[in-house]
Amino acid sequence: MKRPFLKTWIGLVISLLFLGLALRNVEWAGVWSSWRSARLDLLLLGTTTLVGSWGIAALRWRALLSPYAFVRARDTFAYITIGYLANTVLPLRLGDLARASLIGRRKHVGISRSLGSIAVERLLDVLMLVILTLVLALVLEIPAPIRAGLAGMTAAGTIGLIGLVVLSLNRDRLPGLAIWMSKVMPHRVADRAMTLVGNFSSGADALHRSVGILKIAVLSAGVWLMAGLGTLAWVAAFHLEVPWYAGYFVLVVVNLGSAIPSSPGYIGVYHYLAVLALSVWAPDRSAALAYAIGTHAVNMLANAGLGAWFLAREGLSLKSLRAEAVSGGGLKLETGNLDSGLKGTV
Image (cartoon, rainbow, N blue to C red; front, top):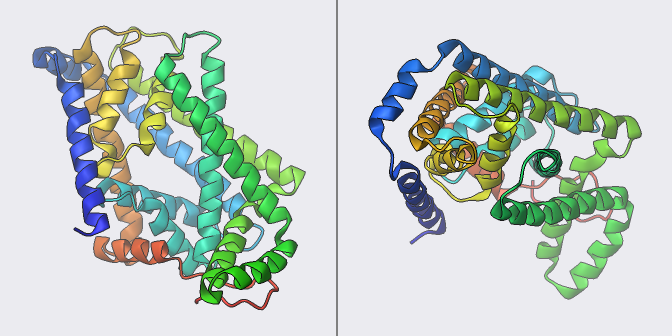
């Protein structure tokens, strides 16, 4: 069995298991009642605010790409939404690879440089999750499993971000390392590895300047502030009797689970984690499940609708989008940031 095929089936099985956990001991009459009483205006407000957070994320990605390419914010926004579409409808969560490949080829950024900037995005998001949780800990007893997950994410995120910055600051030393690697391993392997490291580390170039660090930090905070406000509007839409900060707690919990393999669209895992987070205050699982199903549906509609519109504008189909993602995963590396004489595969 091919590995991608196996991963797809593993994700489907995990999604079904989590969906079963989310649906157990639920009174569907209560779920239906919660849906009927939900406020459509607040659901729309929450979705609009969530899309606003994507706009801030587009500005952040543009800032991360700025050291080596001029890209318009409307283009980074378009490729982010296309990436969300890929995660919604395609297996194996190919969204990041798809948008990295698209912007890398079409805006002459380079695929691995683009992936490097996305890696920085992800590490910054991990650190923002940690900061959010520390703030929530001032008013809320964080469950032990979430604290354990955060500890691992904090360590991984901090080490990863520091590693990228250190590599980026010391790229002039990489040629010497490349020469040493070529002595202990096949030249082709050393060539590809060093080109990959060099291009990935360039994703942290925008963090070298104090102004760049401040700008990206503010934008990262804005992404999560807006996303949290959107979640608060969704919670209010379902009349859940929870404190004002519950929306941010739900945001933290569902994003902590994003590393769990699942089917396209995060089905099952999202529902269970949303119900789990809300159960801290709302013992009625029916109302919590109504929230999970309803917000997941509007989120997926936003992902698919905006993503499909921008995909059509780019003249692409879902089949070609998957091909772009697979191509991005192949990492046809770009040269130009190393003076070692090593040549990557173009």
